[in-house]
Length: 124
Image (cartoon, rainbow, N blue to C red):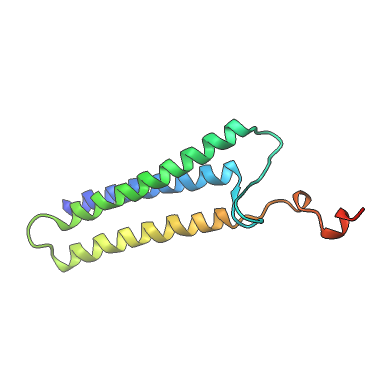
């Protein structure tokens, strides 16, 4: 029963973490440009982007906080068996790899080339 509870918490945490990555991606947050940039899309304004970034950060914090109870639920109680420990750490590890992998993919999205023209265009 503890394994089911731990896996359920880790699954919920993973879905929340992926939602946070989706919100950061839709808001246009990128680390691929010169520093931290927010990609300007024509159909959104500053308030929508700020809300998206805020929701993404909050969702990633909730993901991180929910992984702790997932580990506690799985490893508490009577002496945990090797199978229970392995299951808990595999599920938490998969959640971490999945969420952090998609976060890296989202933040590595470069801004459009038109935003940063080549240096020869800036010459007068």
